[in-house]
Image (cartoon, rainbow, N blue to C red; front, side):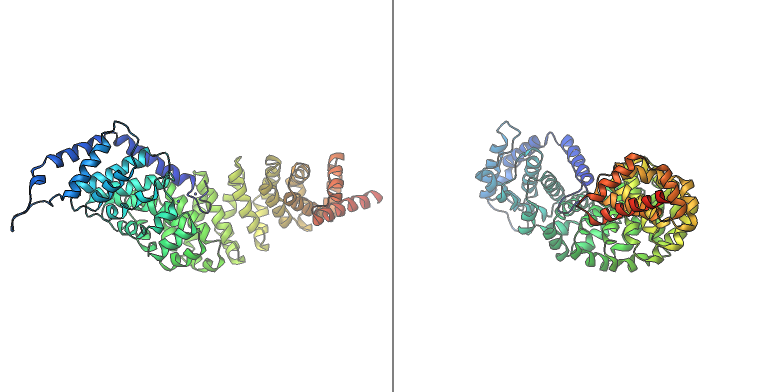
Length: 500
């Protein structure tokens, strides 16, 4: 549920969403403890407590048994401590266990409310034994109990007051998944949030999938309630983080659902669905199914998302397309659909995440010979040169820019390379790059250029003592043999030029 939805943890956006939701509930429930006291007091004073038996044919609410009455009284004493800090001793636990399994919905509600109080005030991990009553509360027939219990569990999970793996070990997955099929949007919202938060570890994802959790979550991605839909898509996103879950997701029809959600009016849903598709696209075996959705529907939807005003969405769309660009046919299809002008616009952005995502996709597209002419005609060589000058120390930008320029530069378009000014960016990168990967790409490109006569003379004109010194230091470094060879080759060509 993405911090980058990284493996094993909920992403920062999901965490913030749930924390905001918790904050809202906290504001709405300042008087919860008093309500519980009033509820228990009213129950204890009711005449039904004195009723010994019910006559046949008379309709009464469930009679409080002696142990339930005692539990309610002890529970009331716990609430009368005058402090907001929840008590978690053995008497409180026994009372909660009794109230949670009671047939009296008011008593169950009291237990659920106390758990909500715990979830809002607890600053330390919840003792394991206090999770036991949750099964009964989550399976209660009372809708209000379901709402309160599921919300308190979300709070505890988000605040990491309970161990997520332990929730699964205590067989709480099935009750949570059953709540997904509730007709109540609040219960659906809370249970989806539980699934999304639990699905941040491999073992939990496997348990959720094995329990049949994929289909009910997928159904809720089509909910008309934006809260439910957002949490459901977030849960699907977290499930895509395990390779073992992907086959089940695709078999259950997740791909067309996620593709359609790219067009959602909700930018968060767009981001979650695009991130999920990006994860799936890391596996080439799913590419064919993804690309067969409609008439290039997925590619068109992702291209549209590239123009989003929401930066993280446009970046994620680029990442997904990059993962899909394995085959030449896909690369060519993207260019024919107008991908290059969109990339040019993105590359003019001053923000590094946008530049990284866009230049990485452009690099993939430049691998295909028919695409190179289009990219050059769109003036991307000049754009790449400016990118190198602007992002002087960004290894991703420097590496992919150099590779792309290398792919686009041929002997028959040497003058275009010179006119674009991209050589200035490459030479600057030679001294500004601080990683071996970036320097390797830059020197490989310069080594290619130095062998093209027109470009060689142009490079010689621009070389300064600083650039030559840098090449000599790279030639003698021992960490990367290929980098040494590239640098030595460039220096040798310069020496030959001087001799002539």
